[in-house]
Length: 382
Image (cartoon, rainbow, N blue to C red):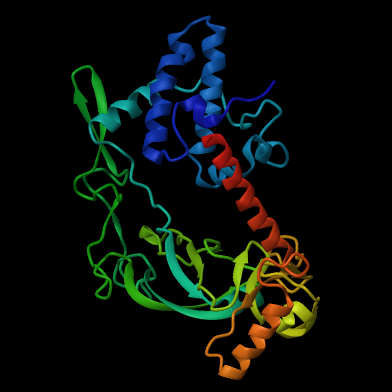
């Protein structure tokens, strides 16, 4: 049986935040929980589907895998059994936990836990040559790093943190509101569970300080505009000594004065004079690795495209090399002297003018078509 999309199951979109996922889950879990639907097998099945979707989408790593590979991400070696549920999942989840969480959100609750640091994005612009051949770059970014004096604890070295006396180190306090007991974030420690009596003099108790960090990055050959490079744990340091976020390098390739890139192929325009176009000849064209020679056949028309194999970009995915496509355009000479003009007049006469059937077949077909058009137009008017 085909599984339903997890986002559809929770009634959310791929752009939904963590908070929206939690809200959707709690709303649906309360509706379909077995404790509220005694003996209803359909509700029990629905609750299992909701729970499964929530467990995947609330976990950033599992969600990323699901977004990339769908349900196939959890078919093998994923810690899920054949039914798709985590081995620790039980359908008899405590209804009061879900109920309490809902009211906790309403009254501002939320257990404060140490979270990983923020992910960062750095925009880098490189040349086409660098994109094709690969390059190493040194970048400098302002970043929140773990304090090297207190090592992220926020406390002066040699001193200790103490459990918050208000919440006894739980980070939350309980309040009664009518029939319900509601949890709220402790106002003394702001949910951090501890009190720092002697803050670090460098980071003032925050555990992090702002620095300019130099990072060496390797940009692989074949990368293109809008590609990203992920550097794990090179983002901001997390609060309360938790792990760092990731750094995403967003690549933009500059416009090139000669070449245009489409996927792994390169394109360029090559001008030739009408003598070479008519008589043919050898021509040198540029590539990103030097010049190559190829033969222009006689009677080449403007707009003709020639393909030079394997002179494009090596694919970053399968290492196949693209091609170079050269588009020919015939350039009309300018600033002619009197002798050159005379020679062209003589050549034109020998060709029988621009309507010459033998030497200018496209021109003849065009003007013959124009003549037939006006002849037909005249006939219809009569």
